[in-house]
Length: 215
Image (cartoon, rainbow, N blue to C red; front, side, top):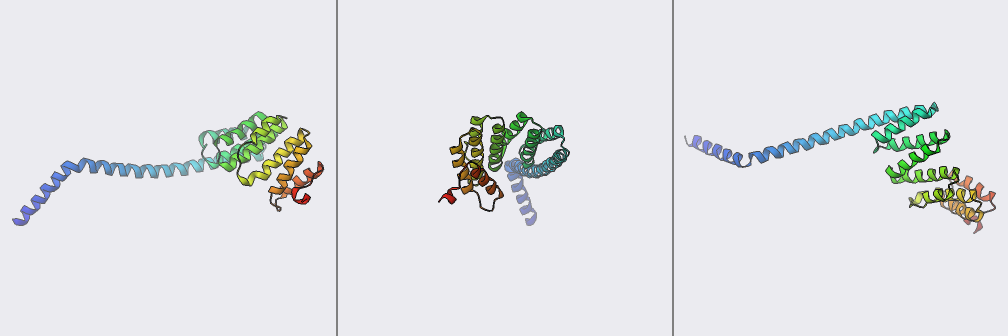
Protein backbone atom coordinates (compact mmCIF):
# COMPACT_ATOMS: atom_id res chain seq x y z
CA UNK A 1 0.00 0.00 0.00
CA UNK A 2 2.90 2.36 0.73
CA UNK A 3 4.08 1.97 -2.88
CA UNK A 4 0.57 2.58 -4.20
CA UNK A 5 0.26 5.68 -2.08
CA UNK A 6 3.61 7.00 -3.28
CA UNK A 7 2.63 6.29 -6.86
CA UNK A 8 -0.65 8.12 -6.39
CA UNK A 9 1.17 11.09 -4.93
CA UNK A 10 3.53 11.19 -7.90
CA UNK A 11 0.58 10.95 -10.27
CA UNK A 12 -1.18 13.77 -8.44
CA UNK A 13 1.97 15.88 -8.64
CA UNK A 14 2.30 15.16 -12.36
CA UNK A 15 -1.35 16.10 -12.94
CA UNK A 16 -0.90 19.35 -11.04
CA UNK A 17 2.26 20.16 -13.03
CA UNK A 18 0.55 19.36 -16.31
CA UNK A 19 -2.45 21.49 -15.37
CA UNK A 20 -0.11 24.44 -14.82
CA UNK A 21 2.42 23.90 -17.62
CA UNK A 22 0.84 21.42 -20.01
CA UNK A 23 -0.47 23.98 -22.49
CA UNK A 24 2.88 25.75 -22.58
CA UNK A 25 4.75 22.50 -23.26
CA UNK A 26 2.26 21.60 -25.97
CA UNK A 27 2.63 24.94 -27.69
CA UNK A 28 6.42 24.81 -27.46
CA UNK A 29 6.37 21.35 -29.00
CA UNK A 30 4.04 22.53 -31.76
CA UNK A 31 6.27 25.54 -32.38
CA UNK A 32 9.34 23.32 -32.57
CA UNK A 33 7.62 20.93 -34.99
CA UNK A 34 6.35 23.87 -37.05
CA UNK A 35 9.86 25.33 -37.22
CA UNK A 36 11.25 21.97 -38.34
CA UNK A 37 8.51 21.55 -40.90
CA UNK A 38 9.04 25.08 -42.17
CA UNK A 39 12.78 24.51 -42.45
CA UNK A 40 12.29 21.22 -44.26
CA UNK A 41 9.65 22.79 -46.47
CA UNK A 42 11.85 25.78 -47.28
CA UNK A 43 14.79 23.54 -48.17
CA UNK A 44 12.51 21.50 -50.42
CA UNK A 45 11.11 24.71 -51.92
CA UNK A 46 14.62 26.00 -52.61
CA UNK A 47 15.65 22.73 -54.25
CA UNK A 48 12.49 22.74 -56.34
CA UNK A 49 12.93 26.38 -57.31
CA UNK A 50 16.55 25.81 -58.27
CA UNK A 51 15.64 22.82 -60.42
CA UNK A 52 12.85 24.72 -62.17
CA UNK A 53 15.10 27.74 -62.75
CA UNK A 54 17.80 25.45 -64.14
CA UNK A 55 15.38 23.88 -66.60
CA UNK A 56 14.18 27.29 -67.73
CA UNK A 57 17.76 28.48 -68.18
CA UNK A 58 18.48 25.43 -70.34
CA UNK A 59 15.50 26.38 -72.50
CA UNK A 60 16.92 29.89 -72.81
CA UNK A 61 20.29 28.50 -73.87
CA UNK A 62 18.69 26.31 -76.52
CA UNK A 63 16.76 29.32 -77.82
CA UNK A 64 19.99 31.32 -77.88
CA UNK A 65 21.71 28.62 -79.93
CA UNK A 66 18.74 28.59 -82.30
CA UNK A 67 18.91 32.41 -82.46
CA UNK A 68 15.24 32.58 -81.46
CA UNK A 69 15.33 35.99 -79.77
CA UNK A 70 11.61 36.04 -78.99
CA UNK A 71 11.85 32.76 -77.09
CA UNK A 72 15.02 33.95 -75.36
CA UNK A 73 13.23 37.05 -74.12
CA UNK A 74 10.24 35.05 -72.86
CA UNK A 75 12.48 32.65 -70.94
CA UNK A 76 14.46 35.54 -69.46
CA UNK A 77 11.24 37.27 -68.40
CA UNK A 78 10.10 34.10 -66.62
CA UNK A 79 13.47 33.72 -64.89
CA UNK A 80 13.64 37.30 -63.66
CA UNK A 81 9.98 37.28 -62.62
CA UNK A 82 9.68 33.87 -60.94
CA UNK A 83 13.25 33.11 -59.87
CA UNK A 84 14.73 36.55 -59.34
CA UNK A 85 16.94 35.47 -56.44
CA UNK A 86 18.66 32.69 -58.37
CA UNK A 87 21.95 32.95 -60.23
CA UNK A 88 20.10 31.57 -63.25
CA UNK A 89 18.05 34.76 -63.44
CA UNK A 90 21.18 36.91 -63.61
CA UNK A 91 22.87 34.69 -66.17
CA UNK A 92 19.67 34.52 -68.16
CA UNK A 93 19.35 38.31 -68.15
CA UNK A 94 22.89 38.61 -69.52
CA UNK A 95 22.21 36.09 -72.28
CA UNK A 96 18.93 37.78 -73.17
CA UNK A 97 20.58 41.22 -73.20
CA UNK A 98 23.17 39.94 -75.68
CA UNK A 99 20.45 38.37 -77.82
CA UNK A 100 18.44 41.60 -77.79
CA UNK A 101 21.52 43.63 -78.69
CA UNK A 102 22.26 41.35 -81.64
CA UNK A 103 18.63 41.74 -82.72
CA UNK A 104 19.15 45.53 -82.57
CA UNK A 105 16.67 45.85 -79.72
CA UNK A 106 18.81 48.15 -77.61
CA UNK A 107 15.93 49.16 -75.37
CA UNK A 108 15.39 45.57 -74.25
CA UNK A 109 19.13 45.02 -73.85
CA UNK A 110 19.44 48.07 -71.59
CA UNK A 111 16.41 47.05 -69.52
CA UNK A 112 17.83 43.57 -68.90
CA UNK A 113 21.24 44.92 -67.92
CA UNK A 114 19.60 47.44 -65.62
CA UNK A 115 17.70 44.57 -63.99
CA UNK A 116 21.00 42.88 -63.16
CA UNK A 117 22.37 46.17 -61.78
CA UNK A 118 19.30 46.49 -59.55
CA UNK A 119 19.08 42.85 -58.46
CA UNK A 120 22.41 41.09 -58.99
CA UNK A 121 25.43 40.33 -56.85
CA UNK A 122 28.33 42.80 -56.79
CA UNK A 123 30.25 40.91 -59.49
CA UNK A 124 27.23 40.63 -61.78
CA UNK A 125 26.38 44.28 -61.18
CA UNK A 126 29.90 45.28 -62.22
CA UNK A 127 29.71 43.28 -65.45
CA UNK A 128 26.25 44.66 -66.19
CA UNK A 129 27.42 48.27 -65.75
CA UNK A 130 30.34 47.74 -68.12
CA UNK A 131 28.10 46.10 -70.71
CA UNK A 132 25.43 48.78 -70.30
CA UNK A 133 28.09 51.42 -70.93
CA UNK A 134 28.93 49.57 -74.14
CA UNK A 135 25.32 49.65 -75.33
CA UNK A 136 25.06 53.35 -74.49
CA UNK A 137 28.30 53.91 -76.37
CA UNK A 138 26.71 52.34 -79.45
CA UNK A 139 23.84 54.80 -79.04
CA UNK A 140 26.39 57.63 -78.74
CA UNK A 141 24.93 58.43 -75.32
CA UNK A 142 28.43 59.22 -74.05
CA UNK A 143 27.49 61.01 -70.84
CA UNK A 144 25.14 58.21 -69.81
CA UNK A 145 27.81 55.64 -70.64
CA UNK A 146 30.34 57.39 -68.40
CA UNK A 147 27.70 57.70 -65.70
CA UNK A 148 27.19 53.93 -65.78
CA UNK A 149 30.90 53.58 -65.02
CA UNK A 150 30.93 56.14 -62.21
CA UNK A 151 29.77 53.68 -59.55
CA UNK A 152 32.15 51.85 -57.24
CA UNK A 153 33.52 48.62 -58.73
CA UNK A 154 35.32 45.66 -57.18
CA UNK A 155 39.08 46.19 -57.61
CA UNK A 156 39.41 43.31 -60.07
CA UNK A 157 37.26 45.23 -62.58
CA UNK A 158 39.48 48.35 -62.64
CA UNK A 159 41.11 47.40 -65.94
CA UNK A 160 37.84 46.61 -67.70
CA UNK A 161 36.26 49.86 -66.49
CA UNK A 162 39.24 51.90 -67.68
CA UNK A 163 39.17 50.13 -71.04
CA UNK A 164 35.49 50.99 -71.53
CA UNK A 165 36.16 54.60 -70.58
CA UNK A 166 38.93 54.65 -73.17
CA UNK A 167 36.47 53.45 -75.82
CA UNK A 168 34.02 56.22 -74.89
CA UNK A 169 36.67 58.94 -74.95
CA UNK A 170 38.02 57.65 -78.28
CA UNK A 171 34.51 57.76 -79.78
CA UNK A 172 34.22 61.36 -78.59
CA UNK A 173 37.51 62.25 -80.25
CA UNK A 174 39.17 62.89 -76.88
CA UNK A 175 42.46 61.24 -77.75
CA UNK A 176 44.37 62.37 -74.66
CA UNK A 177 41.67 61.12 -72.29
CA UNK A 178 41.45 57.88 -74.23
CA UNK A 179 45.20 57.33 -74.01
CA UNK A 180 45.17 57.95 -70.27
CA UNK A 181 42.30 55.49 -69.79
CA UNK A 182 43.88 52.81 -71.94
CA UNK A 183 47.17 53.18 -70.07
CA UNK A 184 45.37 52.58 -66.79
CA UNK A 185 43.60 49.56 -68.32
CA UNK A 186 46.86 48.02 -69.54
CA UNK A 187 48.58 48.60 -66.21
CA UNK A 188 45.68 47.19 -64.17
CA UNK A 189 45.25 44.00 -66.18
CA UNK A 190 47.23 40.83 -65.65
CA UNK A 191 49.85 40.32 -68.35
CA UNK A 192 48.39 36.87 -69.09
CA UNK A 193 44.94 38.31 -69.78
CA UNK A 194 44.32 38.18 -73.58
CA UNK A 195 42.26 41.39 -73.33
CA UNK A 196 45.41 43.26 -72.28
CA UNK A 197 46.96 42.78 -75.71
CA UNK A 198 43.83 44.10 -77.42
CA UNK A 199 43.85 47.19 -75.22
CA UNK A 200 47.52 47.72 -76.02
CA UNK A 201 46.65 47.63 -79.72
CA UNK A 202 44.00 50.32 -79.17
CA UNK A 203 46.50 52.37 -77.22
CA UNK A 204 49.12 52.05 -79.98
CA UNK A 205 46.53 53.02 -82.58
CA UNK A 206 46.06 56.44 -80.95
CA UNK A 207 49.77 57.00 -80.51
CA UNK A 208 50.22 56.01 -76.88
CA UNK A 209 52.23 53.57 -74.82
CA UNK A 210 51.46 51.91 -71.53
CA UNK A 211 52.63 53.64 -68.40
CA UNK A 212 54.95 50.72 -67.64
CA UNK A 213 56.49 50.88 -71.10
CA UNK A 214 56.89 54.66 -70.89
CA UNK A 215 58.61 54.30 -67.53
